[in-house]
Length: 321
Image 1 (cartoon, rainbow, N blue to C red):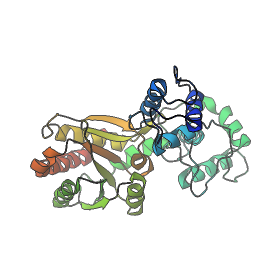
Image 2: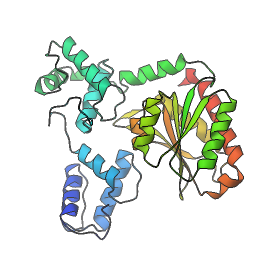
Image 3: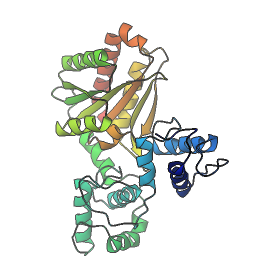
Image 4: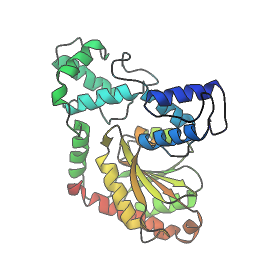
């Protein structure tokens, strides 16, 4: 955890990486985490869809390392754990714009990205070795004028899958993620969704990646995260690298409308973010940051019913996603 007041080589490294992505840490001298470095970290966090606190923790550091990779810097392939980086996001975006479904533009080289790369190599007459190297990038560059579509094929397919889905919550697998502190509300939400016929399950774990793994393992149709905060209420859906989840955004909007009349501060703001749980889930997903805690004791049932109404509205308006 690097923060204001720290000094030494780790701060030099942090400042160099920030400079590498075009963010200046002046007037701080090299190796000093002062006002300039804190402002630079905040700017980076804002641009990358992370929580903005001016502290370089594991998520910010990981994102900063990933931001340093450019297309062609290294060979890209499916590994365990998977490779991550902006070069992978660029590959996914290019493949998706050409009609090869590499999955969400999330900067993670998973199985869908591997399959899309193999399909591209086969269609381009390249060796189908599932490795993105110089030959694959050269072919993608030659097709660059056709790869500027703002919405990759995965976005189109997500919209179409939602439009063809039943207009009911009956039988839908919904994972409710509780990061801690909102267990009573999470259970109330589970009951409200079960009343509507959904197969709702609460997953309690402080780590977003662990929650995403469980939701993916259960092949959930929807993920709803509940997080306690001392700040203002907000709702986030996945949005990063010029891509956003259509289903996630649509659900965030529905939740904001229904929660607005119940929450003390009115309708929560919604934003696209790259939080780990949003980035790593493979279904429409949102995270609701709710605070301060006191209203949930008094209005827990009302909030749960508002979530239920938002879910009803979401599935009934898939034709408008």
